[in-house]
Image (cartoon, rainbow, N blue to C red):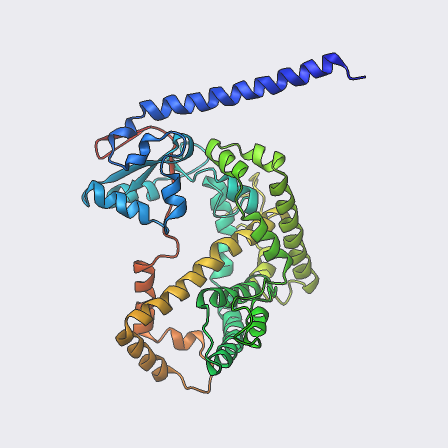
Length: 416
């Protein structure tokens, strides 16, 4: 027989939780309705509290709605205001002086003027790495990790890994070209860059090129898409990146711990990716750090070069911190590099004269039957200028988000 008092307590707690949610949503409605941000130009969808511009942003190509709102408001406006689910306000900053103020303002444990937003989704997936950390914690991680990127070790590993990977990659494309098959360049380049990042950064084979080579052996009547990667880390990461309604709601309301502990799909995905990442670290430890083969080997022994005697800060990264940085490197470094290369191919396709000039310069500094190394690439002035222009015209990271900690006044508008 059920205890009536226990049922009453559970009922009271459940009712209290529902009332709390209603009050929370009502508070957001009042904030949305009375916000001074409504004075800033923006789309008509701002009049909808429940969804705002969410449908436009989620259904249209990246940043296309923002560009349209900007044109509608006038090219000289410094700010455009738009809203999302439950009236969440966002500003598109178009004035370079405001952008400079936001990105160069000092940050620390206290008095941080502009903070990275609390990415519930990212934090629950990749943990606390350089992308999600803030202030002095970010500075400490950067001090420990940065020396690894300045050594000749990185150049040596790139010169070893990249030529052999490119050779395997091009052989697969040559097989496809001989049979007249179409190539999904985006997914193939993603697989290539993933393998290079894996070998150079973690001494780990993600088996991306295996998928490309397997695709090349198929006939044109078979599937044209790459097979799923046979790698525990990437499989778990892809599962973790799938959004669901609860994650979207928790991200909007900043309920990071609700999503982390009550969302079963998030818990399972986080457990799987942490287990896979721990295995990558364990494999690196077995190889030893006396003869490092990747940045991970350097991370395992890296220390803070500026730590003061008697400081309470840890001198090195813990295993959990290293785990989070591995996930961060893959999330932040792989797709951005892949997109950069893909967009460079696109730029060459629509500008054949540029493509011809690039080809001439590459031939000048290399031969058809030999590999190309960093030392040769650094001498290609036009090629390097071209790649920088691709970054300017088609930035792989098309948006940076910050939240103001206190009320600001920009371009005559009050920003709460």
